[in-house]
Length: 623
Image (tube, rainbow, N blue to C red; front, side):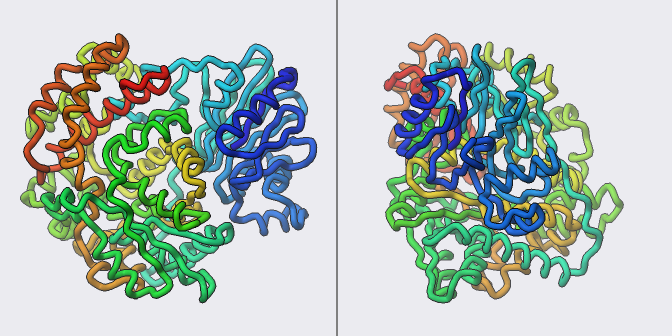
């Protein structure tokens, strides 16, 4: 966590130190900049010209290039941008946020691409404030007014192409892969130097060349992660991504070291395998994987962790941010709690695996259709797992439709599935007036709900662009809040930038071939996990016990709707009549069609989280 306030604010250092103390952090101050020693926050020098939060993976090569042996991350970062300007960001590999004080009184704010600690800013009458979390602005006396339009957009599942805003009026947020300069006068100058740029194609490497390069980059990523950890853990599933990362971590760890693998658990009687191809409980596969790796100690979490709002208020209060995706996060608290109970210092993950070495190549159908590789297209469509549609329907939906403009895709959807043509009527509980207001905003900026007119990517480059855009809607404040709540650091090993950029440059045939999807991941996994797991076509279904968890709380949710109706702004934004109707018609069982479940697991659950967040912001406990 880092923060800086105007030099003519004499109370700022004390207020910011108190803010850090409330988050359980120790603080020191020089001038008006505040920093803490936990979580690898550093200052460049005694003058606090740069505050730095995070890590630099290629710090050794940068120290050599800059002639600064032994320099701290903050000092290396400062030397780099002083030497190379904004081009320095492209030469630094890591995960960081930084605040630099310039000679003319400006502030230079930066966040690394793909992942970074959070950083927001606001102008006060006496100058700029910048800090990791919105609560720092409140500590300095800035009134935080919720941006209701931003909340409604999130409930509409409209992410758009623009990086997410700060959700409070008057607050700005530094996007990933960007430098924001705050001059004493004038508007912020934003340089989005990374801005969802897919890497140039890697040509046509042989299978051996591509696999060998990915193996080396994964090893580099594992070593970089382990460099900071003395007692690591990994969030472990029974699939391909996290077990592959776990196996590599074990390879790079000292022979006597142990790695803790933590798998979250659904309710014993609630996990559903009703959905074709879905695996509701992955513990069996995790145990079989652990049997291959004696130094891997696996742990099954307490199933008490789960539900659409489990510990939501705690995390939202720390993060100062509404993230509707937390409606699917409940069971993950068990992973964090177990890591804390085990005394682990870092929790590793493989969240970006599906966008890197474990991409399934679903863009191949449209790419092959456009390039007249129809034989290959048909082979891959026939081998598509978990898709029982006829071949001609798969051709139209997955190969042809991605090339159709989005407005026409909406019309096609209205013909095929009329009940789902309007994504807001189907999968949200926004009120009709709120939907009308949202539609005007969306039309002005050219965006739409995620499910409306959706189609898979057109080709490899389009898939990479989408993945990078989606990554810009990251949850850095939530991750920091989890770190503060549990006292454990987090790192996504698969978000290592050289690995990401190489995988995104690989040709389509490395990801799907002759009907085998996730081809690269399955080759990479050979010898690292049991063959049955390596070749498994099913997928882990998070929240497979959602039905039982929500069903037991229907009376409580009905009471929450009463409270929503007593709140003028919420009652205007949410369709409480529809919400009551949905509770009254709550399904008797989990549906094998996920689209039948989404109005409950997304639309309804996220509306209840929004109400809780508003209650939190206003100091109410009845929402």
